[in-house]
Image 1 (tube, rainbow, N blue to C red):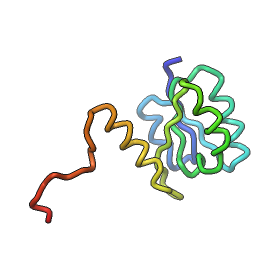
Image 2 (image 1 turned 30 degrees about the vertical axis):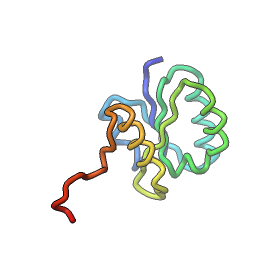
Image 3 (image 1 turned 180 degrees about the vertical axis):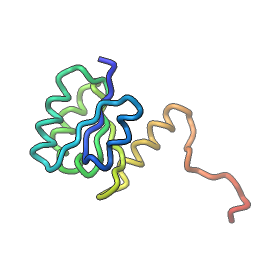
Image 4 (image 1 turned 120 degrees about the horizontal axis):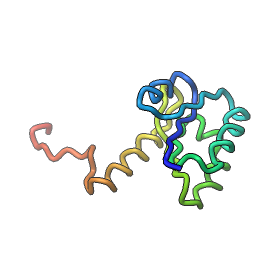
Length: 110
């Protein structure tokens, strides 16, 4: 159960295959829901989901969020971004390094 999946529209996720992640290209809510349910069967510890698809699968994701595994992480895609994916990535990095990575303390920018 140490595999990582990425689900969303093909244009947003195809690059993740080069990193060795399993990609699942879907179009539309129904196809996305079916594939998401398959991914929850236990072989993936992390599922990245493009936020435009996540917006359409809110109910399913909320039900899964009560479980510790697999971790569901929203990521920005190439279209239809809400900003939630970037915020989630920022939050996880802050937890990992203990600092806000987008905060600039450089006074020369003022």
